[in-house]
Length: 463
Ligand SMILES: [Zn+2]
Ligand SMILES: [Zn+2]
Image 1 (cartoon, rainbow, N blue to C red):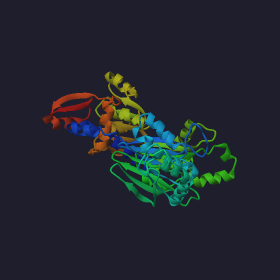
Image 2 (image 1 turned 45 degrees about the horizontal axis):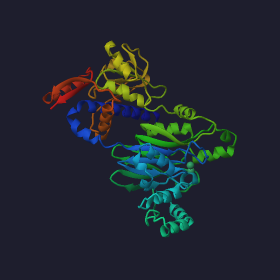
Image 3 (image 1 turned 45 degrees about the vertical axis):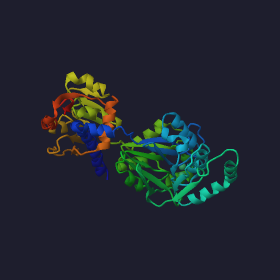
Image 4 (image 1 turned 90 degrees about the vertical axis):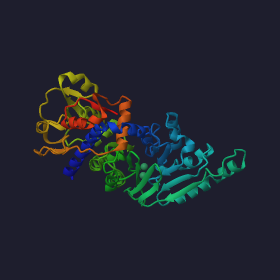
């Protein structure tokens, strides 16, 4: 399994290079793609990462997925409506309280549902006219009925009294779900998958597939392959975790037994993430104990290194001032690599401006080499035993040696990804370097030059 996941990580890494190269040589598609890039990318807003602990700094578990101005909530821990209001104040208009219309509940533990009555009634009082759509496990219908009964007098008075509340917004349409696709509209497809939360008979995680992102939320769970299957290289995996060094756990066999079947340790999460291969792993619902967030992340890191092969994250990018290399040197840092760029002395300022280290002569021993300069066998020789190599010449992949995982990029169209990269370039976050401006009818020459390598920047094709 380790071997295979190592290979797949390299594939992800390769796909990163691929989309960069697609970006570089599809100038003719620019007008079309920049139109697509004006749509706001999918956003994940973590409204609360808490546990039953009444931590004033950590609201109850709730996550919002925002697509095209619509908010989709997962769980409603205590504080959910006020955290949404805070997010709206900070510019996330989709989280205006009267726009909270749909929630997917992972399981019926109180820490995940104490905000449910709040989500039913507060937005209504604040003029939401539509009923709340609530998806969740068996038992949700009964819980909802009880809540409606508990607040019946309030609803009665608001409807009959001077408040002039609307007659629809306090209602709930409950959907008790089974694993599989549970919801679909123009923005998202939501898939529920069963998780292992101790003695809870029904507990789910959710996967959101949008136009541009796949996002997976574990809910509360002990380690389960269902998360691995749902994520499978997803963009964002939000996963729960507990700190096994917490005093209460260390001192109690009973607590240890509980956590083993209800929750996920950093070591177990490391294994899950290694196999699930998310592009971004986010810890939430952290049972902290006496530790810090940094320590918890460090505990996970001991068992999970992201894209990097086991044992190190030092990446050498050859041609780091070039058309593909410049982007790899910049983007790989987002994915946890410590990057050094190999380039000519006169490109030092440019490479360092990307936040990368710089060298003109590389010794061997790198955990991975992204071979933007098409050094091929020479580039491979710079990788340590058991490391990773990604080339840019799919028709001439160097033969694997010394346990090195070898891959080459292959271009494929990916509109949303391209749009995202263009937006990041337009905002100045990514560098835009122009190698040459040529007429459109020289596109074939430009392609040939790109394939050969050694190009410092992009070709701009002029229609
Ligand atoms: Zn919980
Ligand atoms: Zn729970």
